[in-house]
Length: 321
Image 1 (cartoon, rainbow, N blue to C red):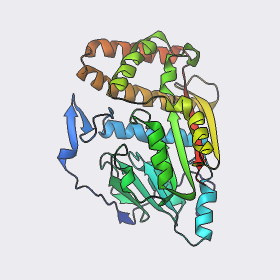
Image 2 (tube, rainbow, N blue to C red; image 1 turned 180 degrees about the vertical axis):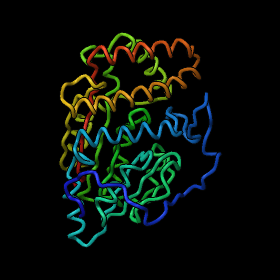
Image 3 (cartoon, rainbow, N blue to C red; image 1 turned 60 degrees about the horizontal axis):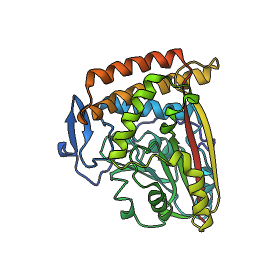
């Protein structure tokens, strides 16, 4: 296993081109208020244009900086065991976005075959030879993959795209080979309503509008707060062997004195302002006044700099018996 410290490898020139199961077509997209969205899933509200891709890459970098590596969990051990057995490790990145995590884990785990799936083909063409991307609605199509066919599954920041987390986790576990590991990283965005997170009145004014929007789309926002209980239930019924759940508070603006946390806070600030701008598009479609929403957002920008806002993130892993 190359680069077994889990650090961030440099992006290197391509050794192949990406593959897609769906032909790239404008039919895959719709446009609204100057933003581009995928056109196959009515639940997921965020766009997939250049501005959003930049946000996703910033989000990847902040998690890399916080963890110091690509993952939280026993990935090295799982991959090494498969290598020792003479079996090619297989890794699935669910909701791969720009594909940056899939590309970097493919560079790090050179023996592995890495697959990234997403709602639209927005990933780069120039990728390592051991990674490919497929168009897939992860809320409907994951069970099209062969059961027990992957050793590592990576799930990150899908909290506003999943309607039934227990069912989704069960499908993920079904896709794992025995001894494989499921990695989950999710922000507890419902916690923004708690003043203890350092959020101000403007964000707490805007956030119920988003929560109502997601509720109407059937989004299950319970997972970050309930993942430990959920994993425990799966462990009780024998679906999970070992698990670890770790909660971390991260700054939402560069208020900490520690340079590393300052940098992380600065990236989170950029990430969330971009996300709010994008989600305002959905609120306008739902009938809210655009000028009023942008005014609230301006107040949130001020709060982020005057207060000490934080975001609570869960890092969890579970292995299959």
